[in-house]
Length: 282
Ligand code: HEM
Image: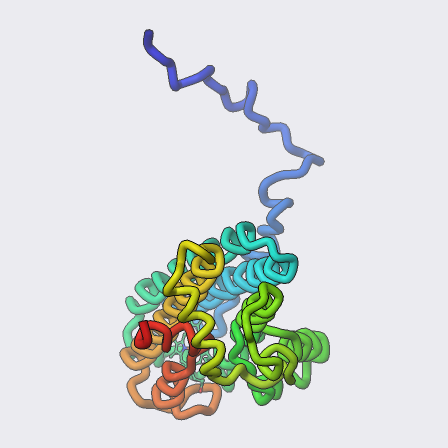
């Protein structure tokens, strides 16, 4: 018996809708008029279009990352780990896209960029509120990062809320406590607007989970998904740094920082320090 995979043919104008006046269309649903009117270069230089689109694409992905992290955190709070893993896996796939995007931007040379860099004024990715939202959700809490958003009360309020709430890692540690692990009280009820500090007691709990993975497979899986996430986040930071270095060298950033020197400092910051230390202790 042969199986016909083709199925019945469809014809434009017969089955496929072409009479769309007054109906919901692809462009209406996605608001493409708005989306595609948002690329407004300030110069007539060819590469500014690329520069704008790369940033906009990354902001769209960051929007979805924030959405998925919130979903994962809500699932962990409800002790529902499988759907949390689904969201975290999706975040990982998005991070792969974000990392690959640097390859496209790397086709812009220093000379191409210098042609329109002056148009940016003080604008810088440093002011990306969605990036900060994601960092706060992952645990990189730093109240100073609210300062560039004081002139936008709605964004400031959103960021401040995320600063004060438990991060994804805090939720994971609160889950460990609920499951009866000896997580110190000061780790799970603290001022969440401060970053989590390395705790040997927490490291030892993860160590016991890694030593007997079959007994706590879901927690082991959670730990490994978190490590994936941090690993990819650091790869993004590294690719950003190298792209910046190849395009502007050691010049200062438009946001006012030392540039590459500033970006390097972020590579030493860890969201989930105990999960990295476990590797040495095993
Ligand atoms: C020609 C391309 C780029 C250059 C030269 C560049 C340069 C810089 C520099 C120098 C900084 C440090 C802050 C400052 O003083 O401005 C920075 C920060 C940042 N940039 Fe870029 N950038 C580029 C592309 C991008 C793209 C495509 C994104 C994607 C959204 C991005 C997102 C960020 C973020 C989120 C920060 C803050 C990092 C942190 O605070 O740890 N950048 N960038």
